[in-house]
Amino acid sequence: MDQASDILPAMPGPRLARGVARALRSMGFACIEEMCLATGLRVDLMALGPKGEFWVIECKSGRADFRADRKWQGYLEFCDRFFWAVDGDFPTDLLPEGTGLIIADAYDAEILRMGPETALAGARRKAMLRDFARHAALRLQTFRDPGVAGLTVPPGSQIP
Image (cartoon, rainbow, N blue to C red; front, side, top):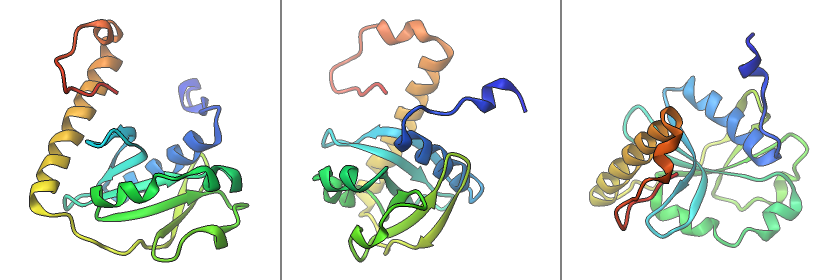
C-alpha cells in the first residue's frame, strides 16, 4: 500500500463518506462528496448509479450531529433514494422510518436497509446529470490545476 492510500480524513463524517464511496464504487456508482444542489444545500455524498439513478447519502457521526440536522428532507427532491450513513456505534433507532441505512467506516460500508425508491422526474434527472457532470469536471480540473480555482467564474456556476 502506498502512503497516499494511508491518509484518512480527520473528521468522522468524511471518514464515513470515504467508506460509503468505496462500497458504492464496487456496485458501479460514481460518488461526489460535498455536492451543492440547485437550492444551495450541500449533500455529504451524491452517488450516480450505473442506470442513471441518484442516491443521496447523509453521513452522521453521532447523536448530536443527527439532532442538529434540519435540512435532510430538502435533499429528497434531488434523489431516487436517500440513505443515512453511520458507524456501528450509532443509535440507529433515532433515524426516521422510510429512509435507507448504511453502516460504514473509513474503509467500507454495508447497506442494512434500502431507502425507498421515489423516481426523479425526467426534467429533474436531466438537470441533475448535467450538474453532477459539471461538478465532477470542475473538481477534477481544480485537482489537476490548483491555480484554476482563483480564476473568475461566470455567475451561477458552482465550484466545488
